[in-house]
Amino acid sequence: ELAFLVDSSEKATMPLFERQREFVLHFSTRLMQLQVSGWRMRYSSTVSVEHNFRDWQDIDVFHSRVEAMSYIGQGTYSAFAISNATRLFTRETSPSSLRAALLLTDGVDHPRSPSAVTAAADAKNHNIRMFVIGLSGSTRDEQDSGRLRSIASAPPQQHLFSLTDPQLDDKLFRELVSV
Image (cartoon, rainbow, N blue to C red; front, side, top):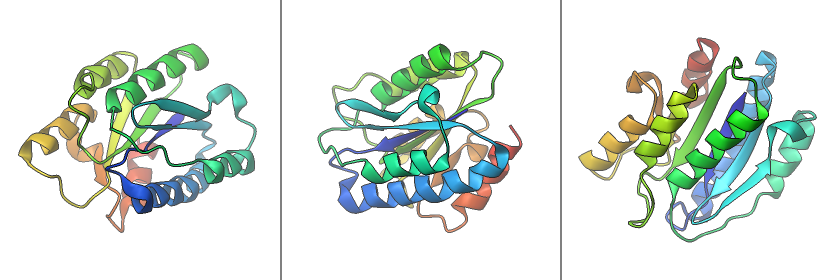
């Protein structure tokens, strides 16, 4: 089971939001060879579950919902996205299923956001593999980079990626196949 957590905050900007949408469309098609069911949500200061596990029908329905996804704007609250994903995984999937969440993020949460690291620790305690995909090629500073590594499952070098990496699909696919 795979969840795409798409950053729809104002810092992600509309072009980055579109790039994330393109990634979800392309990568979900590739994942179909693994017979994965998935869902996606977009997050900002609110979380919107756009397609959940129970609604899974086929890749075409999933793609139509991804294409209809709209940009929210406002602040980044990654903890809300991770917590909602954890709740959906525990409610809608078997405890024995392979669970993975792909958090796409600009790396900077709103100052009033709860801790994304704490939310990720809870997700990991529910056997959810956390993959983090940064929206830019470089993190803003060492603190942001450290936080993203803390959100990602261990070892972080296998769970932390960049949306700007031309080999992202291949690297991420290899890691998901090895789960």
